[in-house]
Length: 258
Image (tube, rainbow, N blue to C red; front, side, top):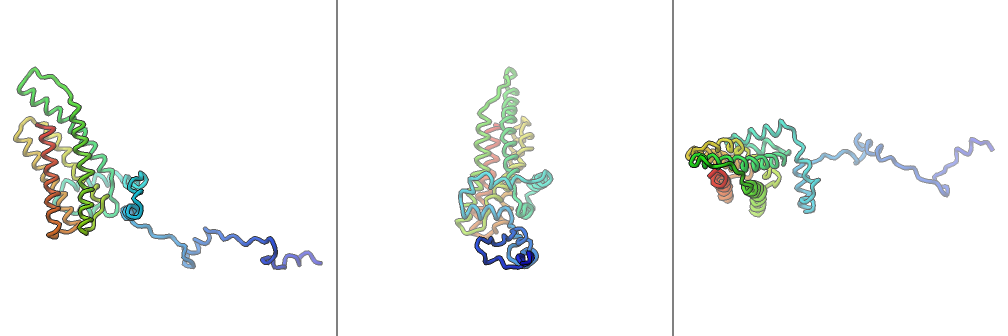
């Protein structure tokens, strides 16, 4: 028999024959050309992915990998958001961050503010004592660091979480990541304010801290109003946000710059 005839025999039904392996990559490419269903899927925004993960599986909230995407921001983006926080009248901060809120600003601003309050608070206390007693010597009170860390970190983390759960309970749309982002940037105005509070004039210090506190409070209140709406049911929430921000400003003045 001719040797070439063996090659024409069907082999799919023979014992021990192995079916052809379909290449997944070629099938995926076929799907991308429109012939199948295995195409690229459109990914949602990072915030939506995190919130869906947290709603379906609360373990994602305690996973560090869930938050790494919120630290992938450029310097220009952070600077632009810092500048926006100094102009509270706009009330469009949530529109500017869009689907890309960051936690880098929250960590960087709060940490900078903690060390500045501790350092400048000691300096301000020394300057005030030096005016009344020339024999006063410099001493650094480490308790200022503990007070600043507990006050600033606690406020910037707990208050947004409280508002998030309250608004969710009231049936309003809320995003915890966006709240953390907005409240973190709202504290940026207190960084240059700490420099100005070194002036050893009490009445001037009060004017400076009240102006800074009002600007920061308006930034939080106006952005919350534009984000969740200004209905009568939520008006008390806006007032509470304003008063809490003012309370933080007064705490900074009374505790660190007495």
